[in-house]
Length: 243
Image (cartoon, rainbow, N blue to C red; front, side, top):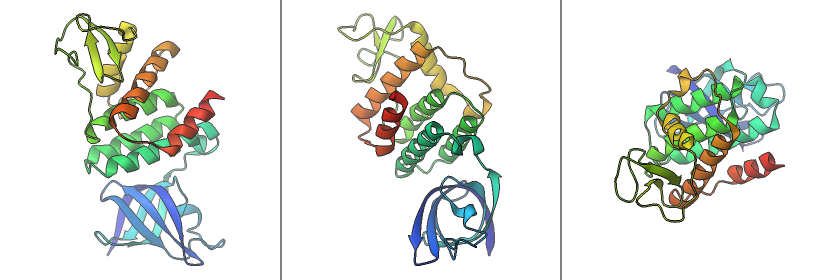
């Protein structure tokens, strides 16, 4: 039976001379594989509908835990702004690779919602670094290494928080402070905002460069220290943005 699902193409792989298999993150079934017959053919109407980073409603013949069959698709958003900007494409590539890793450990429906809403905000022109850090922070829970944003990571004190430390893994109060770098109180406050904000509800992101830099620095250290993920797309993004 033909079924309509909402999804985003993560990857496409050649299959035979004229077909391909696409990996699609769907709202209804999570990450699935679709056989797209004839979609590599230059004259095929499905060629453009089965490209990487396509966000659409897919009409498919779904087979649970098996290779499903692609029938047709209707584009939801062509993501023209992202696809015309090498920086945004690089951010998207990283977010796709990161989400793929998260899906290996969690099947929570909110992972799809947070991913798609982040991409739509990226397309709408909101700050790509802030959006990426927000999603990175939210994904830590699903990777099994969530941050405690309620108390000092060392003694458990809920007062006199002095800084955050990516290597030690969270907040540090004045009594436990040793040689950690001190960040502004705004950084500590914004980190909590990043975690609790509903991505879909974000309409603007007015955050100063120093705060963004400190939060990104913290999350980079935390990911390196606790997740065990080493993503090529993140390395490429860092090099590209630093140019």
